[in-house]
Image (cartoon, rainbow, N blue to C red; front, side, top):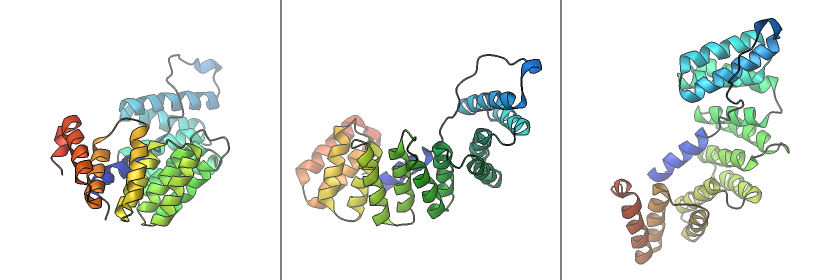
Length: 249
């Protein structure tokens, strides 16, 4: 059973799959000079901006209008999927995500986003296929993120061997990718390979600031290895940097 500290980490990784595909819009379109395709793009950008702000009613209006203006615009469907998922309309969300993936099968952002939805909703093996499709696209700028998402998804099956392979592939792209490092630290802790768990946690801490979850994991790794001074050092850091989290130990 996964540790409580990593439950939050896995959730965060799985949720970091929504890629904002459009920027803010500050100009108005002249309806007399605008094609339906341009209008759909404009309304998708507006809908994405409203979605980021949490103005869900306005986002829905703009995104549904965009789909009406251009039913083949994959990004509008992808954002509608995000919105419907956020308001717990899961059947509509899956339809929109799937339509986006059908219309843009080579889009790594859409594949990664749809993979995240599938994994969050129990279709893990299918979700992993979408993550891997995204990661294998040579034009994708962050394959390490999709590979790490695949690893988190595999852990939920559970398939620890596949998960470790995906995390290591992520590190082959970016050796200091912290989410893959902390996942490997926790995975090795859960499989009682404490030496490897310690090594991955130390690498994680080398590349950035500590989190409460990482320090809790550090305490647990060192306790498991019988290194009381090291465990005490992690606990002291936790009490100093995250006093409220220290109460969970």
